[in-house]
Amino acid sequence: MKLIVLTSERFGTASNCIPVIHSSRACTITRVIISRAQSASRVRVWRRKITKIGQIGLLGAMNGIRMRSWYDKDAADLLSVCEGLGIPAFETDSTNSEETIQLFKDADPDLGLSLGNSYISPKVFTVPKYGMINVHGERLPAYQNAQSVIWPIYHLEMTTGLSIHQIDRTIDTGRILYREEFPIVFCEKLEHTVRKTIQVTQERTPSAVRYVCDNYDTLLKNATTQEGGRKFTTPSLKQFHRMVRNNAVLYERSRSSAPDTDPIVEE
Image (cartoon, rainbow, N blue to C red):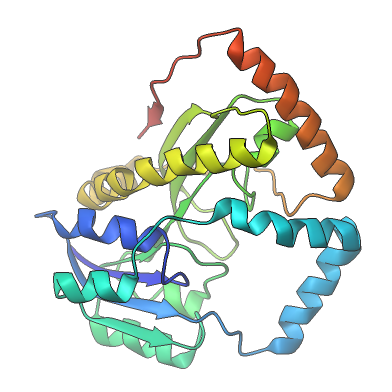
């Protein structure tokens, strides 16, 4: 199967996943596209930002910016990774630009793989023969659009997960091909809980992505439609304080119990 990879992160998930996929005999990565994520419509971007600030408040937005570093990924330079593996890599200004679309068409791929992007237009994800799949670092359909780890904690849950789904016209709503659930790594501080758990997610992601690519035909036949999905965004300051309190409660609970560390995998 011929794959094309699209990412907006030069130092991110794609850098960790591509070497693992490259070792597969069932799939070939024909090219990698790194989008600089510069939107063609700055007005639209600012409109979304203003809307979000209206929903979560200015302090919530500022706190969300502060939290971004919690999700930093330990990854190599993707351009260097592709060069070392002999995979052609291209950079474009926008995820949904005409340049990106043309690069997709020229590659004539069977399947597109999204590793670290926001919204992808139908003009892009419909080019590959079988469309595109996306990796979402949380359990679906319970946590669509969600920042990983913090929203399960908000609901006093002790597990997180990762999901791989078919891309459709709205974010994180496509049919689920693969889902994995595992314990949150609780620490005294919420920040450390997020950082430690994200590290676990990053370690699990490459093998999950390769598994889906290697077994795509079978998984597509058994893919499940999402029902009862819940959408989340950056927390307001009030919601964030609840997350901090809940993290303290769950940290103490985790210390007094011995949760099963084996992941729950659904195919």
